[in-house]
Image (tube, rainbow, N blue to C red; front, side, top):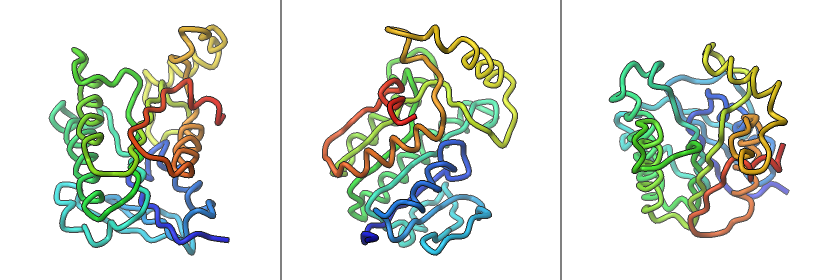
Length: 220
């Protein structure tokens, strides 16, 4: 029996988001899945509604953003963004604005992909921005906030990233070395992260829960 819940996903064109969208469409938990992005995805499904939005003015689209569970898979790299300022816009401003708008419509759960090492006090810019985003989202009035902190993500990306590809090759060859205290640094499949997100939502719990990379590996 399909439930009457609605899921909203932002960033479904990305590595984790793509897998997450497919899992949401397959899940009997939801009778409607709303996907928002700058472009319409080449995906069709009876449950799926797609809206193109301007993330710089997300409030204008608030009537299209009504859902029970919100899955935020937004993210970029400094190289792709072109500057630290643009990176912060995507990984902090867009994420936090989405959380604010959807919490204003009484969404119950917010599930967001962050990163291993996220820390607002970090001297590493990437980790600092992720940590600041986490702090901002935690303060919003959701019943539950789930933060997922994956290590290096494995999967087929649309764009080629030399550094990440080299790291992926290394991890696949020597991943067995990452045991004990090093287990948290072991690379993780993007689909595994997506599965962990859906599993967390299905618990219908409360509070702020952080899901570290090694914990998510159980869904591989």
